[in-house]
Amino acid sequence: MLLLAGYTGLAPEAPAAAPNDETKETTTSKTFTPATAIKGIDVSRWQKHVDWALVSEAEVAFAFVKATQGDFRQDPFFSRNWEETKRHGIKRGAYHFYKPEAPVQCQIELFTNSVVLEAGDLPPVLDVEVSDPKVSPTQLRAGIKTWLEAVTAHYGVRPIIYTSQNYYRRYLQGHFNDYHFWIARYSTVQPEVHPTDSWMFWQHTDRGKITGINTAVDVNYFVGDIETLGQLCIPDMVAQETQTSPLNRLKHMYPLP
Image (cartoon, rainbow, N blue to C red; front, side, top):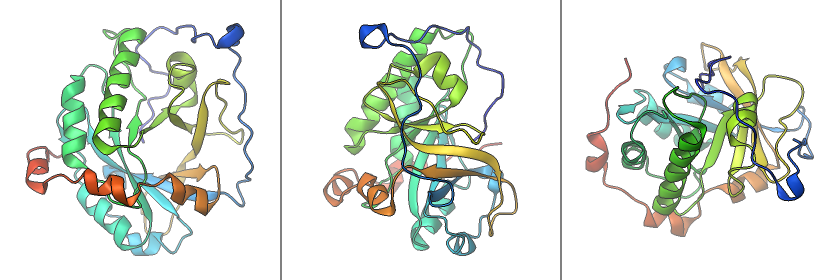
């Protein structure tokens, strides 16, 4: 995912207060080490044509694939990546790149009309990493909440929120207790979250080297074992209830420039 370092477009705002006015971040206790962690990647058009057969042999257990951005763009490599990850036995998830200035309902419709989740797929992800000077922190969070609730209703599972450590600290900590976070922190120090929040994925580098991908790629750790990762995936009953006609998705297939 593209992190715009140093740019947020909004002035920093104090985090929401937790019970007893506790606002201190704490490092959530995780029982894993990089050497034993479940490894995954996330890809978009920047990785172009990925050789998923080779990726599947590189101890990559899961992959998040960029599906949509804003209110009218589908990643041109989404369909191929979505099908190939499944074909090669890699647990897959789809993410939407959120644009605060774009109409939220249009962003919801773009994603839900583009992504059909099946049994075994990971929950949808909302990628929140940019802001707009015309959108206040309160409005930003309201739009995020609207997207999350609508997508939860559509798929029957709560999405995961992706963001950077700094963005999380400024705008999100303590405000989305019902959702798991996926934190980008390019450091040897694991993510830190508010006591009321939890994280499950750590994007620890954007310069990973994976066989089958000719460019640098984001590499992630999952907190938990392979069985826990499977339990996070979409169950059969939910998947059957969220099928969408492919014809309904075609109208949104506008490629990125």
